[in-house]
Image (cartoon, rainbow, N blue to C red; front, side, top):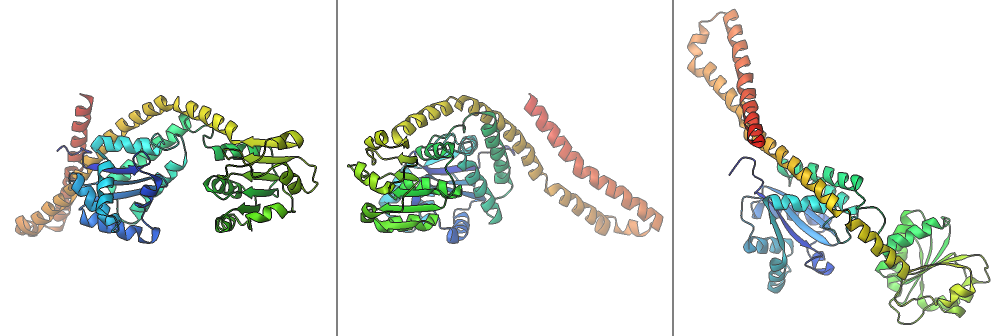
Length: 415
């Protein structure tokens, strides 16, 4: 094996392409136990370096290891990750896991950090998640020089992808588009938000709103506990769903997204919720079928933000992002070549790290044993000259082999 081989780098991936989000969730390690679990995995599986990447739709183990990554290795890994896995679950995870070895592992990591492998292509969150994963591994003593070099290159590449292409331009999720339209309407920070439904879509939108300093939320949901949980996370108020019919505090923005097959807000309820307020309102209906009766928009002054138009815009934006993928791939390929050259040079440096110590040992042995008697016959001036000469030779014997090795590498690279 060549000194600069990357074949000992592997990635074992469990992501949204093969598994449900619930299945991916079973591979998440709790923050309190993560470092201890990963150190155990590293020791038990004889892994040299290890990084654990965990997001809402992927869990990946990035490792430096001389072992072959086969089904037995993955089975052992899964048992260490989750001791409660059944035999059937381990078999399922093992059969569907994606394993990338050597240069394919490097290429995969570059694409992950650049969001080309994401559930939503172009989402910027992944670069932060990847960076944090590598930094956490370094802090915990799980990773070393090889994965540190990979991290530096993939983060720099991802930044270049986001800077030099339009891959991350224009939002592609309904929630982010809905928020952008709200922002365009210049809604005041103290606006009153009346929210119907506490599912994932409304939860995500509410988190956007809280992040941007909106703070006046009232939440209704058929399951009160879910409304209370969402209200707690955004410092809002939760009310029982049946209280919607008697709610008399007014609103500025009405947001609804439920799984109801019937209209939630009809003309009569809307009139009641207005409380004789004639100012213009905003209605965001993210439900299919609609929660808010469209006839309301014909009878009242309402800026309506509807899921249908948002989905159409999302698809157009996603198509635009996909048109940038070829450019992204070019940037990645260029930077993989740069990384491989850096890795070869760094591998030579790692291999040569023992040279200084060996040279010092030879010098010490020469002074203390081989030429000890002869040195004793020298006067102080002679000893000083000898010491200067040996120090000079020591430095040359350390620097020259390194320089020659790099020159050989460069010659091979050119040819």
